[in-house]
Image (cartoon, rainbow, N blue to C red; front, side, top):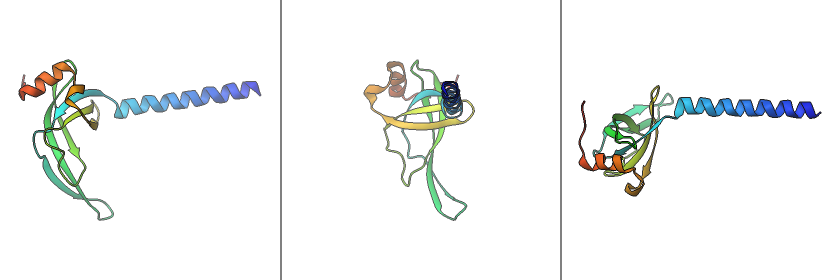
Length: 125
């Protein structure tokens, strides 16, 4: 009975660990900080059941903690644009692009990223 419980525990740990790893590889990634400076481009699509889906597409510069830049291309799936001047922490995955975002306060943005965002410049090099 003891061996069965140990075996079952091991299987549970392996399955849970595999799930966490897959989740990280699929949805995880590097954090970038973005400021919403436009209203976005409104897009209206239709789901397979005929329901109207409104989103707003954004293409904005994002910065890592160290101040490295990457253009973030993502959609806000809401009936209205994201709040102008809001700061977002965006998760970017090399396979999926932007996988998530959350609003953050300016005080929570690392210094190098905050400096780049306050300049409002985009390095194209």
